[in-house]
Image (tube, rainbow, N blue to C red; front, side, top):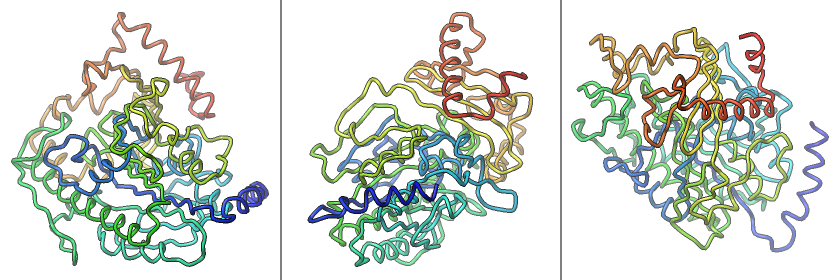
Length: 455
């Protein structure tokens, strides 16, 4: 692998920076646990003027899908172009019993660094090991303090090396804090935005109770703080006079940290915001309906930089379709989940088309495990305290105890409540999706293929 990296550097370092060729920078902005609670995605309560402005200047994807609804695995898929079961980042990268990306995997920072880029990450990274994800600068800033993050970004933008940069900004918002979302915690220079619990919309997977409304109001406050940070970093980029040469990508790692979303492959966990601003594009404010995956992010970044992707990367560059409103051929995405925390083993495989979603719950005999932050949340504790049988519109029992096969018509049933897997009228659909899913698992060297043989 080291030899391959050196060859990459030799091939690309010269022509990439020769003469008056503009610096092709990349700024990757990753929100933590942000669903589609964003103004430009139709949320009338969210206060996200900076994210909305970015969408107005670029391309907003309506069908962007994470490959997994868990922090570390999702970030690994973005940076490697591989699904989590192939890159090896099966679960979270912190604590004693952690997961890590396979050491022979080629990542975006590794390939760009070999090609002469300066690479940096500010605040949350949450993948390992360092030899797979090498950075020239790792800045452990407070991921909720957008002013501090922007100040650190400004320093990196001002570097006089003459090399282009790849900067990943990992915001902590709107991830849960120890209690709630800390939206009332003051930070110098950062406005606090308060939300009335009675005004927040209730997602289908949550019940309408005072506790849930208060929890969501706190969450919306954290989203507003995230938006400030996004705006501050983009302002620093503009002031550096490098915005015209910088590809900006904004997305989230997984859905909202509430029961029924994060750590699940239901749409609430993986159907997320994706906004890309190409400064060279003529069309602005494009809304693109094509289905794209977070495994497409790595090839997109490398395409912009003029660096060849690793042969194993499953994704495809999004750059060629930024100015389009749809690409019919992009009609399928896949997902896989193994762990969140190491105690949360629940492997699932997903195929999602524009009309259907099929889920294979490999360990369906087990109850679905809860992430600690979701279990301890006011929203789930309220369910336990009330001994509720419903989690929003879904029975608690069906959420925890799942069948081996789930099939949903996501056009007629966007909340994924009516399982069609046992309906003979949809046997053909189920069979077709199962075949495509297994073919994808084979192509991506899924270790869990063994389950077909023994179960």
